[in-house]
Image 1 (cartoon, rainbow, N blue to C red):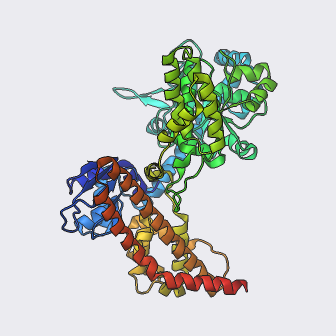
Image 2 (cartoon, rainbow, N blue to C red):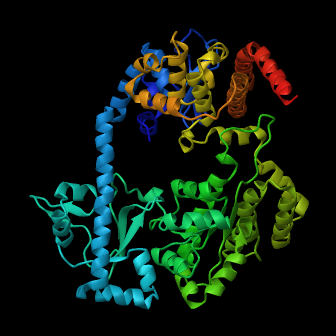
Length: 615
């Protein structure tokens, strides 16, 4: 995470803007009189979910937390960065210090790897580890799996690990930072883990970042994890992901189980697409990791009452991450994407977890995967199993819980099938249910609102913007064409500031001049773009590529404005303020069309050039 991203993560744009402007709640957003021009009707809006602001009045400008402070304080980016960094508690460090931090992080990896090797050696050889070895034997964990996953044992000692690692040259404070020892009051240290089966946790790159530890003597809690460190964040880790990622890609399916032993059993029996969260419910970060590998997810949690609730939570969260809300913007023509993933539930025998099923009969486990229930089928089963459908109250509750979910199904045929099924369950006419579902179905504006409300932290990179900047930086001959771009086209803070530096530099082919005009936090970004390798191409091909980039960036900008229009109109309707807002957003859209008019000749020329190149 860059310094800029970290500051945005820590600061709430509403809190910052509120220091300068009196904000009023407007639906999910906030509005105020614009601080940058005189007006009587509020046209300045803050969108907290996106971390942006926009003036819908005569300014017609907007941006993020940095651009607001820069404009409000009349300062440059570097000054705004220092103000916001101090407010966020983020230390701005020079590159030398950044490299030192990288070295410290690498040392934490080395410490954890050394600890894993030590624990593994004890499990295999120490007499005191007999209980741990017996436990693994009873769970049918093979020697090959023990070695492959480097399972270990922590002795019943206050300082055995500390002494071992200090002999390897590591210091007590480093071991505290690695989460392996605890500093005692009055001085000294004690080991974090004692008399436990040790399970190394690795990141997707295969590096040990922490441990899960199972008690062997009845101590509670049964499982504990490493504490939060610079390299261990349990909300963003999945056990087994380093070994499972290739299988997940190849098979096009990720299976989420509940515990470490479930993962070990699955991998031991050749089912390598299985991972587990760190003893908690699924998080957005964890589902996001899966989404980068596949759009097919199945949850196989313990089939008891608690497991059912965990399944519901996991499915609801996965539905959010995999569904249309992953799209940052609605389709320009008002359409929306369908569910972009296949979510299922593996229905386990009551009272058994995946570990037991796999050990007893691997073929049964494979059959359960093949017969996994689609998301809506599972909802039907869960809801109806807890209700008495022979009574009116039970029927009403079933409709109340299931109909909203059915209304969100994008495929009309699939939706009709589930409406028919619900109709048969509760004895209500299918047409009546369809009418109610239509009323519940989100409107285009509501879908746009959901899309706009997605936090932008889920996708911090802007590849098209970076490609465009790379072209401009590496090919000075494109300057005359690139100068027609507007900073508003660059949504990424780093990219916008870099474009402005390029635009304001007369000698744009001298990277050092551009570099000197940048804040130190942006210099590395410049270096990366300058050193990026582009394919060999003629000058005409480069001009065509830039024209295409310009057009696409303009389209993205217009889509963002269109999305904000839909959002504000939706909220204005709910507040009875539709006419006022509509007039404001229509004024904005007229302003937004001006740059595209200016670029029309360039786009047309690019089209002719592409046509000529094909001929």
